[in-house]
Image 1 (tube, rainbow, N blue to C red):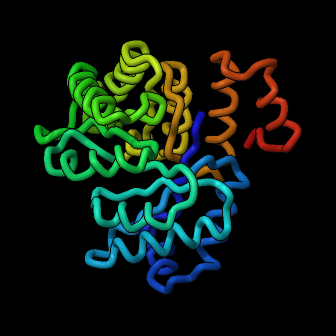
Image 2 (image 1 turned 180 degrees about the vertical axis):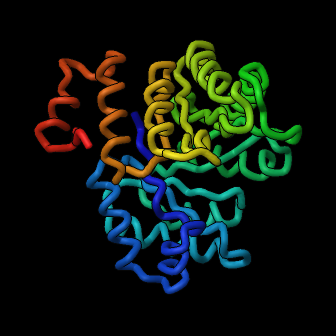
Amino acid sequence: MLIVGELINASRKSVKEIIENQDAAGVAKLARDQQEHGADYIDVNAGVFVGREPELLKWLVTAVQSAAEVPCCIDSPDPKAIAAALAVHKGTAMINSISLEKERYDTLLPLVAESQSKVVALCMSDDGMPETADQRMAIADKLINGLVRSHVPLENIYVDPLVQPVATSNAFGAEFLLAIERITQTFKGVHTMCGLSNISFGLPERKFINQTFMVMAIARGLDGAIVNPLDARMMGCITTAETLMGRDAYCMNYLKAFRAGKLAAS
């Protein structure tokens, strides 16, 4: 499971202040904490700073990579901001995200292809957000084939089928899970990714829903997630689910997590 740490996002009030003040120490702590708790990538998002996003995203990448040894997931729909961040990034970045929305697709595709970064391919189009597994599959097919034609390796593609709140439709959870399974079975070599907390939007005890949904998604083939690595219960659920799905030879990752005290019961 590839873990993208989600905490350095300017939509969070405390993080917005850190970025606004260009508090490198504050960014460094968030980056190190996430790496130490299992993040493979650190998501960086400065989207609330209209007009300053390229400058601040570039600063964020530099600050994160000065403190942590893992690469960044550059989170923006703006190709100028992504290009600025890629210019200072060391190693293989991840771009979050390209979609089938025409303007976004046309401007980001050359950048993804040129940089040979990993990329989150979001199942969204100009027709809006998909509701069914069939709609997600149709978008995923076009995104994957377009990326491959532009010489993006299959293993660099992480399809995000787009989680929608189950509180607005009782079918949204099941349709997402079916899409994960079908994408995994149909497009061999392609990865899947999601920021799954939207599933619980509008409901109480959201962490319980998120943790349960994560286990269900892993059982269907999910192999990447944008999460809070400091959530010990969530990380414990991920480790355990991967073990039960046969992705953990001799249960070594599970035992390592247990010995490190990372499988907290509460």
